[in-house]
Length: 84
Image 1 (spheres, rainbow, N blue to C red):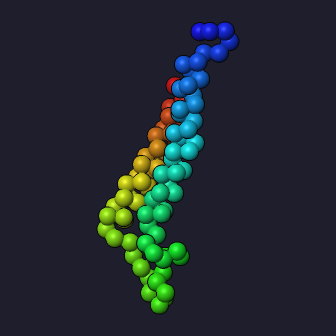
Image 2 (image 1 turned 180 degrees about the vertical axis):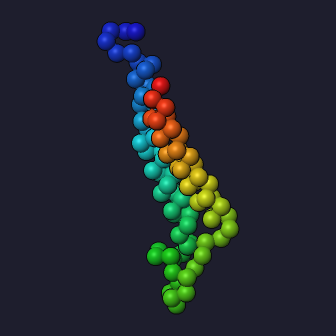
């Protein structure tokens, strides 16, 4: 410990804040982006027919959403258990 600041603890809090505060929402946004149809900004073709993303994009979006849901469930479980 140097002075009043514990630099190791501060770094841990900063990394956790970046991962949870920015990483999880960014992963959710990536999942939404993967679900949008490529080349169609609103998800529809010019003739009005729905355009679906490919199987790989849907699988990637599913993985992103699964990680986000897992993080939320883990956070709730951590809080319910007393937060220790």
